[in-house]
Image 1 (cartoon, rainbow, N blue to C red):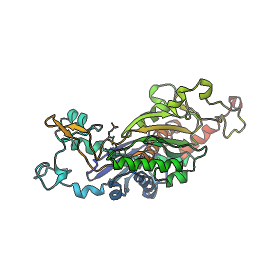
Image 2: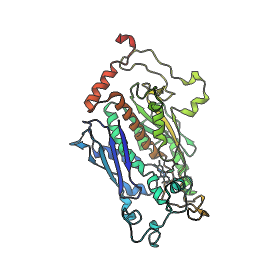
Image 3: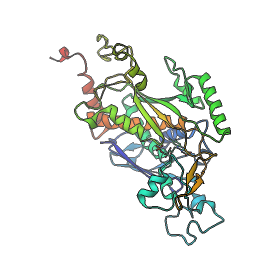
Image 4: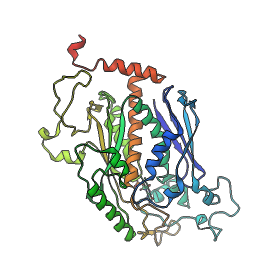
Length: 397
Ligand SMILES: Cc1cc2nc3c(=O)[nH]c(=O)nc-3n(C[C@H](O)[C@H](O)[C@H](O)COP(=O)(O)O)c2cc1C
């Protein structure tokens, strides 16, 4: 089983990541992970923190001489901003308890609850009188750790020809025309990670206008995994269905409010004959069971069907606003303006990179479940053996 854990607070000393179940013999290094971390940090509409961070994950276990050992892969990632938060986020008891140092704004207790965040339910559930105890872990800083874990999964999938991509399809009500074939290099270079340059320009105008108004904007992202073999996931139990697992993984990303496999909401409006993807006669045994369309996003019955796995998710506009919403104080229950802490205006472009990571982690686990193996070579033998059995049944009788 491939699974991962993260630990760490947004302004604490750093993040910790453990990825478990990666087979031995996979080439992996910190530079590879850094590329993915760098992709998460870009994007038009991001706040000042991205200039401070420049994330780097240090591998501390599970890799020797550039190859995985089959043991848990441990990584740490420094929070560069920690130097400014050492008193407020001190691990040990401090003399000048938060709230008692008028010189240090960071040390003040946070009681002005921000609607749309984990602040209120978290403080009540855990019995805190300082919302910082909640917001530090609820922050999307944690998604940097997910991207480090996801990079390991992407490296494994890459070994088997499976590739991950994402692009932005809407921001603040501006929608992109999705081209028939997407130029992924152009998406990487687009400030909003959008494949339609004309829509990208309008998206940036929309972000600027929200920023000027002290407001925020959300949007929709599409994640695509290509060269996925037929038969990952299973129809036999609800919790083994690949579409359900992908949906849970993407929905768990901060601020995600809907997920669909394929275009989702659109297809429910169409007739059955317009939705289902016709299977073509088998002419190429290396690529059997082709379809000319992929409206269902590459899954049927909770299993991948050999077409690209495509999922979309929508993220709400960021809840922290320069012009905060009216709220209440946690201490008194009285009307106040919500707390403001340095914040992005639009988090849609980086969310695609996080989505790729989460989908890759689900796919890597499903791949390991189907093909097993303690080393990459063993996994490869199992995979290649399976590919020899996926043609029309009569070939094997
Ligand atoms: C990449 C990324 C960056 C984010 N940055 C911020 C931010 O700067 N300020 C903010 O208020 N929310 C930000 N969010 C959203 C919050 O983390 C999220 O809305 C909050 O934790 C509440 O979670 P929920 O909407 O899933 O319930 C970000 C989300 C993502 C995916």
